[in-house]
Length: 210
Image (cartoon, rainbow, N blue to C red; front, side, top):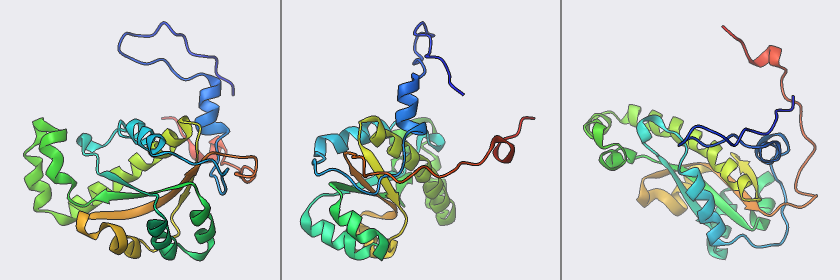
């Protein structure tokens, strides 16, 4: 189904919808990238991706997602050692790599990010299981927006779960109370970046109206 371009005369304070080309860049034409061009990805581009992704919705604005950009040769070598074999070569070759993690102590920031609910900091402090579940769910939500932010800048993203999280945490994150859960290769796309699109389930299998 093709939707028409949005009417630019929108309610003040609310953005217009995206046009068909923008929706295609983010969703219908976008795919996971497995290779990239040799063009470098700058720190400014990576920072710009975060500056978009940080606006993702989270429960009570908790914002538990943290991002480690691995750019140095030394850091890349340590990261590749922790990747599963099928992901080693493409991680080594990617122009940039982001390690996504959640902050196990996100609750310490509640007075800053949600002042009306500052008292919740103590509730999470006393309940490690609730704290972990909340951080895990909300950071996963943010991760999807991070991929869209990368795509919106004309870059391609290759998210991967195939790595030893404990090894990554020990090498990079232990002192920060961050726990890694996703690695994303980032770069400028080429014709060789993408595999053929795999099928999606039909409406009859995935949605209901009540």
